[in-house]
Length: 250
Image (tube, helix red, strand yellow):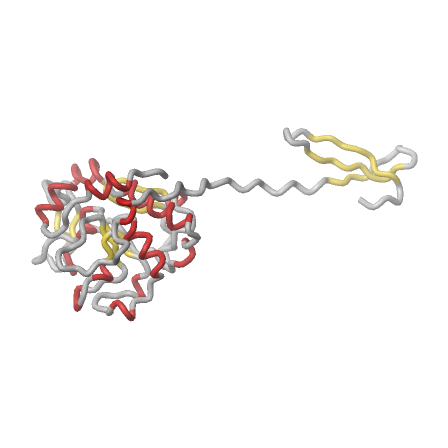
């Protein structure tokens, strides 16, 4: 899809505090939210109905699979979903869709580190996604992270904050969030490049043409000089037939 990245990046919220996230995305822990244990919670029903959308995986060509589960949608905040669609279109345009191994989640009602004493995770606002989690766990230093750097660059160019730029125990190479970069983070030179340079339009997806149906060959009786009758379909799908001479190869 086409997105005005300059406008999107300029409207992107700060993510330093819960208050900043709530101001931009609303409060998932508002009225009706319920703690379910282990630092997880069910979001406010009113907030979820007003803000969460499901992006069909079918609209994300080459999207990596979720381990062990067939996932048909990616749940995100309504303000973030268009950004993911446009970012992934750029990933596809550069031929990088096959470079990721797994998708590992987007919206999750939880606190940071699954600790109810800590603030809400950006995932709880539907403003973050995790990719290739098994190879890029918490605290893995950037030089040991095993996520395709070309894909990372596309996300960063398009305005996402990559957790792989964080350091120490906070390093989080699987994580991408739609907020301004956190203070003190050493950024790549291409961060937010899409705000400064217009990216080429995505390559349109052309549906594959179905393979032509094999002809149906039937015996032909009472036709001197011919021994087969071939049935085929024309471009409109209409059946037509013709006889084949004896001894001729079909």
